[in-house]
Image (cartoon, rainbow, N blue to C red):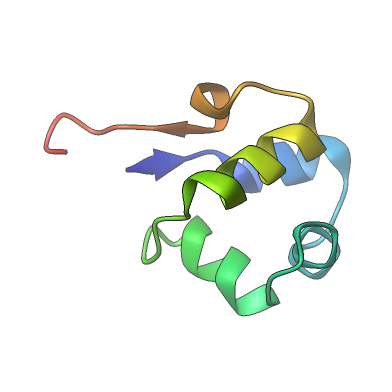
Length: 66
């Protein structure tokens, strides 16, 4: 699964730490998601989408190999 978290954070001008605080996870979790080392739960994906006022599929999307 790919994501554009880093781009969305840049648009909204928030740090990994700020996003982590808003969705109640560690900064390391946000970093791992951006590096594609961690696939978030449905609940976490929905929380992140809400922060950016986007649909989940606008932030997270499948690769052909998924």
